[in-house]
Length: 298
Image (cartoon, rainbow, N blue to C red):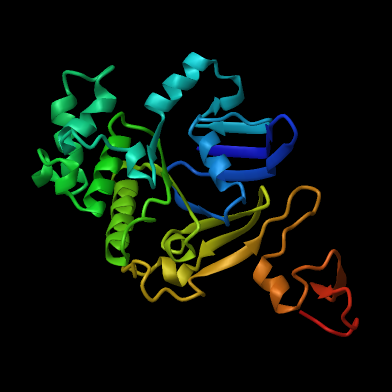
C-alpha cells in the first residue's frame, strides 16, 4: 500500500534549511494496522503530511496504492485526497463543524459526488462507529470520545483505502482511548482498511501488530508483536501491557547503517558519545562505549 524509499524532505526559509526527513524507508502492506512513533521533531508529522498528499517529498520515492505521489498534478492530488485517503486529526477543530449535527458533519465530504446517497451513508457510518442514536445531536451535546468517533465516520465518508490517524486518542482518557483503539481494529478487520496511526504514546502503539520508530528523520527501529501475544484472543487496551509484548529490531539500510535505540545507548553510558567501539564476538556484533575497556560487553 505504501512504499517510501530514501525519502527526503527539506524545508527552506530565507536564512535556513531544515532537513525533516533524511532518507527514510518504510513499507506498509495493504490492510495493515500499524503505528509510527517518535519524539517531537523526529519527522513523523512530516511523513504523515506526505502520506496524506498535503506535502511533497524533496527527494526519494513515495508510492501509495500504486500512485507515484511525486508525479501527480495538482488536480490529481486533489482527487487523491478526496478518494484515496482519510484523516483523523487530534485537534477536533480540523475534523468537525460545531454548529452542525453529527449526521450533517458526516455528509459534508459527500456533497461533491455522492449527494443522493449521502443521507443513507452518513447514517450507516454513524451506526458503524456506535453513534446511530446520536444522529441529530450537535457537538456540545457529545463527549470527546463521541466527537472523535464522528471524526472517524467523516474520514470514512468517501470510502478511502488508507486512513491516517494523528494522535487519535491524545485528548481522551484511558478508558475512552481503549474504546477508540478497539473501533479502529474493528474497522481494519471489517473493511480491510489500511490504517496508519501516528503517535508519541508507546502504550498506545503497543496495541497494534507493528510499530515503526522514527528518529532524526530516519526509520530507527521496528517492533513486531510477539507470536504468543498475537495469538491471544483478548486485547488489554493499553492497560497492563508489559514491555515484552513486542520484539524490537534495529533497522539497517542498504549501506549497513543503523540507529541504535536511545535506551540501549543510555544503558551503557554512550548516549552522548560521538563514536563507539564495534567488536565481532563469534556470531555477535558487540557495541561498546569508546572509553570502555575492550573486554566489556553490551
